[in-house]
Image (cartoon, rainbow over all chains, first blue to last red; front, side, top):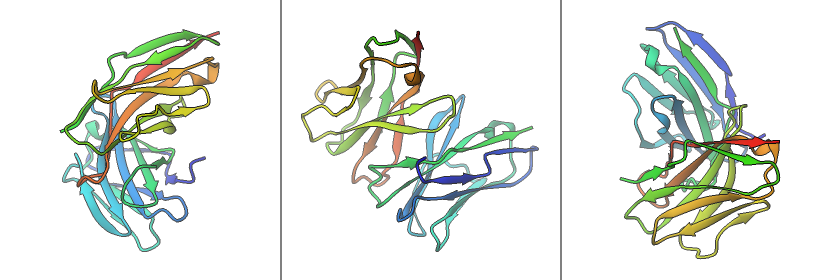
Length: 113
Length: 116
């Protein structure tokens, strides 16, 4: 158990819908990273938050957004969902901004039908 | 831009034997870290081993060790005394420390099967 929690574990929704994925980092970790794992794109970085502020963006679609709240949990919002958004979404946390030790949550499996 | 290449989509090893997974990377940065992550069927991403680029000594964690060749930009993982529980997808990853984006860049993975 990495100490990082993600909810829900599984999510099935229809095209055009909006969903919110939630991540709680390890106790004391200020950084949260979001990654997407799909069959065609592999594992890719989406976005990084540190202590409530966005630090870096990767290949994140404009339909996707994220935020980190004062209690340090983070939410990834996916809207206007398409079939191609079906993937496993991971969050990872680390203590500082360096990202050297990133501990991954169990992931949320999103299926868009 | 940094890239990570894993040229072996699948590997197989007999239980108790040794196997080496290959990884090459491309970067112009000097301060970086390399990692091997394991993803078993549960899909959990588990950090196996980490190597700091500034360290010449190869990292070792129990049965797992790396062969880090900085000049060749090669970072292979050796698993000794393979166990059934080692069966998983293994990802090589790169992190540019101190860069604008301290993100992990992953290879495409190597699926390791362990035969009893």
